[in-house]
Length: 175
Image (cartoon, rainbow, N blue to C red; front, side):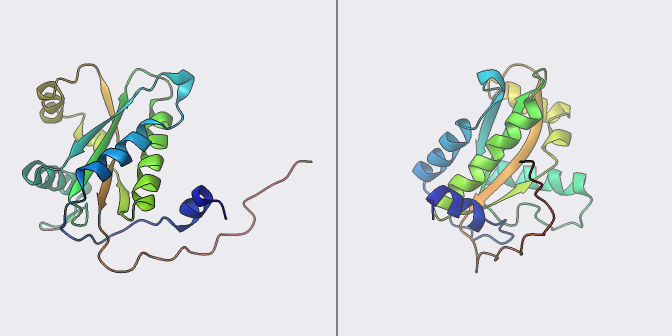
């Protein structure tokens, strides 16, 4: 079977990560793959913020937990040591689509390198706050940005889940 299709069929969301930090070179490869995602008119409107600093990672996790309404102590990133935040140019008409394709590439790339990943929402809500807009300013990122998602990455703790059978009745041929 083709390796790309195999990765698409085997990749699953991981909900328990080991605390060990993946190699920076691997994180870089994952990000690079994300940046090669298809995008509207070649604009490349999506950006990635790679968070490996534990203090900032834990702060983002706590803010995300509060937005999601979970009980204190819950980690919405499931212990993943790396958070890749995807943002897209708020004024670009295909921003959500382009950023979503970046997220998909990030998760497939992580899988191909033997790492687990999961897409976590609420980046939109985070980056609508003054605090997270200030973070962008502090990072030297100008413009108006829409939070697309967080790709939590790390080494999976335990077995990777098996895919559920695909539901019938989801393909319609017109020949």
